[in-house]
Length: 266
Image (cartoon, rainbow, N blue to C red; front, side, top):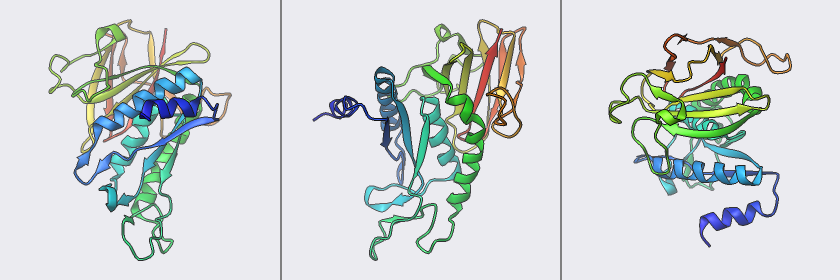
């Protein structure tokens, strides 16, 4: 049975949600092809069936399948790239390092075999604190489309002016373009949001995006602190972004693998 048919057969059983795992960070490097192909296919199918998508986040090394221990930047990217494809929840694999009867195929989970916390535990805790601020907003959003800049792995769509957004600089050459995922969302009340994720996993990335409709305001839904918007609950601060409404240009600074969420107004 083909994978596509297998997924559709499962969704035909009317599950509560669709959860899947694929671990893209290998000892040979990141497997972009399968990561994006799977996210794109599953987000489309979950939209058709009206089901939430959940993702397992790589947090262990598994020598049998050449799965590497992820860095903090890689873990952050795995989470934010999944959220950019509409995921509504995530789970870490593994939380505890599996006991393998003396074998060492699994190692370096969030909790080590003796119960102590690995450094990846702190990575996960920091990422979770960020996403907790964004969660109430993201749960209220429906994904409309996902675009990429920079190199284009299989099953990805290039950002074009037809999306309503273009790179303010560096857009004429994919090799010179900042590597980003740019996702467009609509809230239940009709508000428009954009999530921007850095595919650069080694260093901070700065980018400038031009919004062709020149909205009156663009506000960042901060993943750091504060409160605003969602049923008056303390979740994240909705603050002024670095946005020039005269030119429609939004300036963004992203840590390696980080994503930021913005609301467009007016």
